[in-house]
Amino acid sequence: MSMIKPETAKKMYDYYTKRIDQLIQAQEALTGGVKSYTIGDRQMTYRDLDTLSDELEAAVEKQAYYDAILHGRATRKITAILPTDK
Image (cartoon, rainbow, N blue to C red; front, side):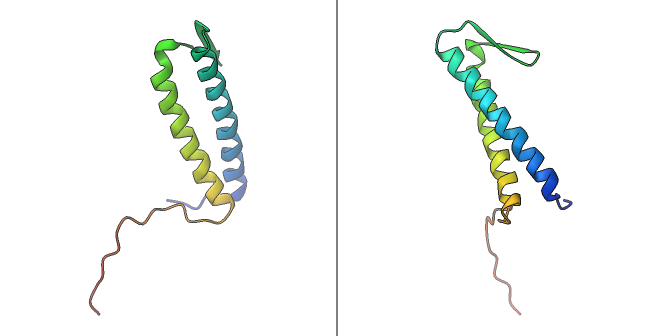
């Protein structure tokens, strides 16, 4: 994977911040009794709440990823350390 430039990370962080705000507004509207909600050219109904929750979770993860890049934190997770003999 190539190194992401700070400028690109900032743009992506801002994009996902706006996306999260849009998804939360849609979720609040649909749970508040609105029959349909539109983001851009996409119209959603109460039946789309599960998909909306999944999209919100993914957007939060992406935002955290770009935030980590901007603040110099590791973006990879260590899952296991395997000792080797030397």
